[in-house]
Image 1 (cartoon, rainbow, N blue to C red):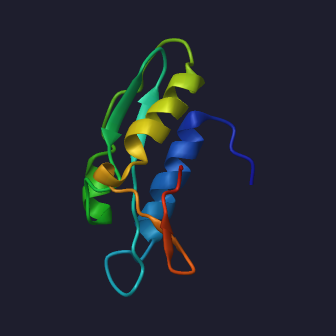
Image 2: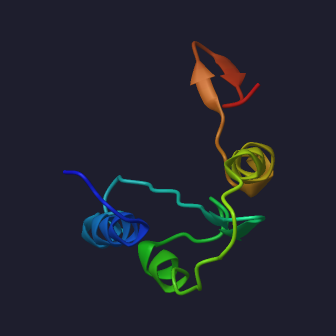
Length: 102
C-alpha cells in the first residue's frame, strides 16, 4: 500500500486505531502526537490518554502551515516527547534498565 498524502496517512492511522482492541485484553498501546511546520506543537504525550476513544477525540485539530522543520520536530520528539516523565518506558535487557535514548 502506498499512501500519497498527509490526509491519507492520517486516515490510515485513525482507521488502524479504531480497529485495534487496545481497551480490552492484554494489548497496551501508547500514542503521542505532534504537528510541525516552522515550529513543533505537541498535541499530546504518551501518558496523556489511557484509551483509544480519548486519543480519537484529541485528533480534532487544525494542521499547521509553514515550512517543514523536520530537525526541530525530531529534537522535540527525542528531548520532550520520548522521556520517562511524558510516558516513555524503559527497555529491560537481561536485568538492566536502559533508556530508549541514552
